[in-house]
Structures are given as C-alpha cells and as structure tokens.
Length: 555
Ligand code: PEP
Ligand code: MG
Image 1 (cartoon, rainbow, N blue to C red):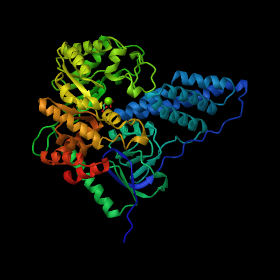
Image 2: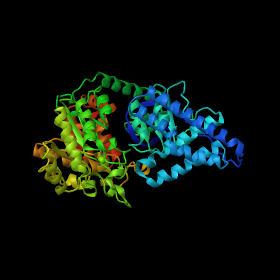
Image 3: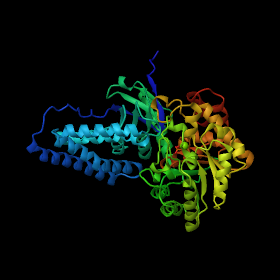
Image 4: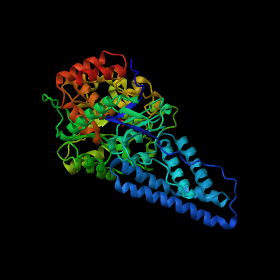
C-alpha cells in the first residue's frame, strides 16, 4: 500500500492552490551586544552613520511603496515613516552620544519602543513586527550586509515562515511565491491582508512547519487550510489546474452578484477611506457594505471636527454616487483605540468600552459623527445606510435608530454579539437592516480572542455555533422582509459565501480584492445547492466537517 503524504492543517485566509518547493526567509541579522565604547571624538560621525543608514532604509521602503498599490503600498509607506520617526532616531542618537556604536544604538532604541508599544497594546502592539523589521534593515545596512527578507526564487515556490514582516509580504511577487504558510499570525493580520491583495494563497497558524526541509515540494490550499507535504505529483498538478480554471472563471465574471439560476445577492466592498472606495470601483463591487470610519482617525489626538468628518465621508459617497454605501459609526476601542474617545483603563478591552458603548463614555461623539454623515449626504445627494457596531441590547438599537432617523438617514445595526443575534427579530422592529460582523461574532460566541493565533481554530467563522447564529439572524430578516448582509471576513471566503447565501443573507461585503472570487463562485451554483449546503453545515459539529459538507454539495 502506498504511504499517504503527511497533511498539516492551518487556518485558511486567502483561497487558492499553490504547489512548489519550500523556501524560507533568510535568517534575521544577529545582534551581538557591543561592549565597545565609541570615543567622544567619533560620536558625531557615528550619529551620522546611523542617520544615513536609517535614511537609506526609509528611501528603499518608499521606493517600493511607489511600485505597489493598496494595502501593500500603505504598509510600505507607513514603515518608511516609522524608519524616519523622530523619537526613535532621537533615542538612538542619545545612546550613541553616551558611547554606544550605531548598531547597538539601533537595537537599544528599538527595544525601548517595543516595550512602549507592547504596553500600549492594541494596534500599537501589532506594529512591533514592523519596528523589529526596520531595526534589522538598519543593522544590515550598517554592517554592509544584503537587506534581510525574502530572496525571490527562480521557480514558483511556497514560502514557509514563523511570521512575516508586512514589509516582506508587501514586496512578494505572486508569480514566484505561489503560497504562504506561517506558524503565527491571525486571519486579520497585516500579512493576511496583503497576501489577499496580492492574490497569494495563504494559511496562518499552521503547526508542524519546522519539520519541512527547504526544497521539499508541498501543496497548499488556502481555501481549506490543508498543507500536503510531498504530495503525489499528478494529484498536485490536477489541483493547481482546477484552481487555475477557478481563477479564469473569476476573471470572466462581470457581475452583478447572483447565483447561476439568477437569485441576486449583492456583492459589496469593505473600505476605510475615499481612496479605498475609488479603488473598489475598479472591481465588480456593487456598492460599499462596510465603511470602517474609525480607521480614518487612528492617528488623531483630537476628535476631528464635524466639517473635517464631512469632507472624509463625502469622498466615499462621491466615489459610489447613486449606489449603496453602508457607513459604520466609530468602532473605537479594544484593538482599535481612538485617543480622543476617552477609553477608560480596562482589564479586558474587547469586553469593555468599544463600539456603540463609546457614545456613553464620550458624550456627543456619536451625535457629531451623525451630523457629519448627514451633512456629507446632503452635499453629495447620497442616501447612506448607517449602522452601529457592537450592539448588544434592543434598547441600544432603538436609541441609535432614533438618532439616525432624526437626520433622515437609514438606520441599521451590526450583529457581532451573540445577544444581538438571538434577538435579531426584536432589533429589526427598530432598524431597517442588519449586517453580521462574523469576525467579532466568532470572537464573542466562542469566547476566543480574534487576535490570538493559538485560538484561530475557535475563531473560525465555519464554527457551527457561529453559523447557527448567522442562520437565525437571516431568518429574522426574511420574516421581517428586511435585508441582512454579512460584512465580516466570512463573506470573503467564496465557499462560505455560497453557504451564507443559502442561509438567506441578502448581501456579502468583503475586501475589494475578494469580490471577483466570491462573485464567480456564487455564479457557479444554484440557490438550491446553497440551501442544501447551509443545511448540511448546520448539522455537523466542527469547522473541518462543515467545510467538507459544503464542498461535497457545492463542488
Ligand atoms: C466584524 O467584526 O466582523 C466586522 C466586520 O468588524 P471589524 O472587523 O471591523 O471589527
Ligand atoms: Mg467587528
């Protein structure tokens, strides 16, 4: 009997199949603690040496940003800014002036900021990988070594790594890296977001990668999270060919969103600003299903004025003139703290003052935002739908709806907390639509931090408990005759999108880069197949069985 090829499992984040030999990133530079004291007379020159190296690194990152687009360009640009950060350079300067050499100062200054960022937590803590990456680039420059990172292979290869710096991922060429698998990282990490934009199949939180030697052929399936080590060559080639056929179908798909037998399901885009909205126009997205307004203000110390907010929202409404735009009010707190939102110090911020709850912590903030949305709507002639994040009670939904209607806007709420899903019918007595945020719904249903790579299997939206709440919510929408959309990452998974359609959701909103894959997949199946798949996934006990059940029905 032939031995089966070993199969590892991770969390799938970007669908697609890749097959090729394994490569790994070059090791990061080793930082040997320097005992050498730079003499007084040489310190000025050592400061200049550090400054030059930091400037070279920043320039290189900026040059790469110019050749990238979307999330990749943003990450490279943000890292270039970080490499020039005044406080970081001043910390290094101070260390050199007290006798450290430039490499020790780069490492020491970075260490200070890593400690600070980790203490602040949330998004700042996520930037620690960026800081360490910049440190390594500066060290390599100071040592005259080649830039650390990924050397692009000659043959299409699979990149295995513990974790990847966003700047490394952003520089990848999808014709040469045909799959990414990491041990760390979550489905919403920067690496995952950039891989999605580049269209590279990607799996995160995979255990057991250390045992795979460079050069070993592996087959990765970014839709199921399976990594087959040394697979049968013919089977691997067939899987890749099937994937290419899927991609060709994607390229041929022209929208609008519908099943093969013509049941319409709107396919919308998730964006965070005007430029994202304009970029989404180059896809088949029929509108904006989630405008994450808090992401416009993460770098602000003070609340933006109503006029400033009006300009920002109007840019998005303008980009989608005459189409549907769903704006979400500030979802500040937890992993997205806003400095001006008066967050209290909390032991457990994901369960604390976030989302709609900041309306109580910072009185007037919601009203001013709604005034700005109404002004932007009046200026552009748009009729935006406006929804609140993290609604947990019917009273919250009712109060929000009243404020939104008072401004002639269309109110809705996000379903991200199990209590809201369980009471979806009562929420609908007050609002005109629901939008299911499966990222948080999974986090709160499974009591598992969505940022934790160790818990990625629990925060998987294919968990039957999460899908049961989705089904219940969409049934409530059907009974009330009101739309229910999905705007979490679940809507970006083409197979799951068909299952959601089978549960009766009326729209799917995902990253612009996922729109074609979702639309094309949906156009390949009938409503009945979607409904059968929905039925089947609700009858099994775990995500692996749910995916298998859906695949057997939807192909
Ligand atoms: C969600 O929770 O699914 C969602 C769409 O909101 P966010 O990811 O911004 O928390
Ligand atoms: Mg959410």
